[in-house]
Amino acid sequence: MTRFREATREDVPAIVALLADDVLGQARELSDLGAYLAAFDVMQNEAGNTVIVGEDAAGTLVATYQLTFISGLSLAAARRAQVESVRVASHLRGQGIGEAMFADAETRARAAGCSLMQLTMNATRTDSHRFYELLGFKPTHTGFKRAL
Image (cartoon, helix red, strand yellow):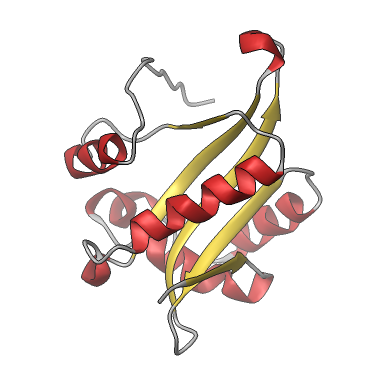
């Protein structure tokens, strides 16, 4: 069984390893942890911006996601839960950890007064696309990104 909790600074190396544990992450994550530790410190001071980790019975981190709460005016002033940086250790995928992770995210989102959960994913992640649809997410929008 996976237990989910808020990440600590000490978890950052394991989180970065999870982020790098796939084809896309291998090419974009850095080996120097300095930038990640600095970003984590900034995030700790931002209200409604949290990294969550999932750990197995032995305390090993096996999953992670970032959860950000966004207040807005559209959709009748809906408060949203934005889910990002979703990862399950590659050797453990398909064992229900992802479903448990999204159940955890939904519980946290409801507790924060959110009426909508949203996420983005890289368009090349076809397995993830199927997974999110199985969880009830609908591909209702097209997203764009531009590097600054």
